[in-house]
Image (cartoon, rainbow, N blue to C red; front, side):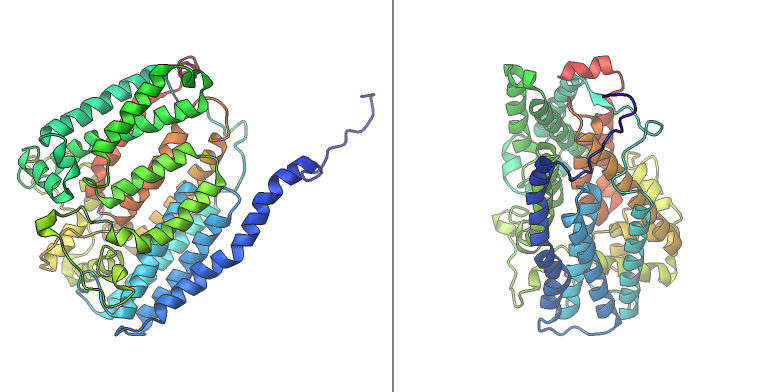
Length: 494
């Protein structure tokens, strides 16, 4: 080009090929936009609200309807957005179903999975606090500029996975899962029922009386390294032509698939953990597919209504199988697992009855879950058990959603600030993840950790945190084990 000749920069849409490439996705998004938004924000809430039932149409009901519509609007935005936001998307999917549609159905029918210990005003306050916390989550997310690429000043060198460290992780996976299988008495118990595997863990002598630390560690090392090793091996084969041309990576993958079929199958594991396994593997195999991302969130709503409430078929053996009489189309959302809003309201009543806030004590118990009660005699119980025992409930295995954990520890202001921080962190990680998956070469730790956290967020949001801490700690240890910042090492994974 001659000196002084101006350089012409074409606008983004001046390239016909780019337009042709992008228009089908944009057209599909536009076609899906109106029916999806109407379904999540109008049709489904209206269908639930107009069902016959003995519930009251009071302040709690109307607040619940507002929360449901708000969560449906935000979930629609996650599904239809141009950028894949795994952490924010799974957050709004949980809120829409567990804190929105299901409690709305309970208000309509007039039944709850767990009795309401206080008055309807406590329930209305719980719904209002959830709504405020969700708004704080959005405010926190808005503080992160959407789509902005890290500048040279703020960019960081991504932590990668080396082949040598992958071999160590695979060894840890087979060792941990092997000990898990042997401790429980062999393979048969993993294909019987969840009740039988729970009894096997109790009879194994891992946990001392009154302490669940041993159980959490045993389950964590028996299941988490196997899942993470499978994710790394899968991503390695997807991104590396050299690995696909050799037999050893394929043999490793097949062996890890077989191992996960034993220790992470839906028969012997809680449904929320198996959901974590499915989402983590789905987003590992298809990290850049907007179709799979939108399908996962969209079908997640249908699965939560039609499949999830009935997915505890293998929880009990044949002699203890429970049958439920269904009198309403909303009963699956009323009689099963969606007790999160009710337990939040019961926690408000528990605190108002003179118990007050714990000022971080519950969180300390979750972080230090591995300390046995024989050493820490005043170690706090998980929040769901604490409130259930105060209610004199027969079944104390109840949820304690993150709203409950933060509110009981830090009060309403601490809960709102906590969700604002979570929203900011989620948006920031989602942004970095969106850029990380477009980089060529081997997978970074971020491209592995985010799908795992996105899947596990259902467990973290549902609570109690104390029960979720074991697998979190083991997962962090495994990620630290395979992380390296030295490029000469991670290039070996090509």
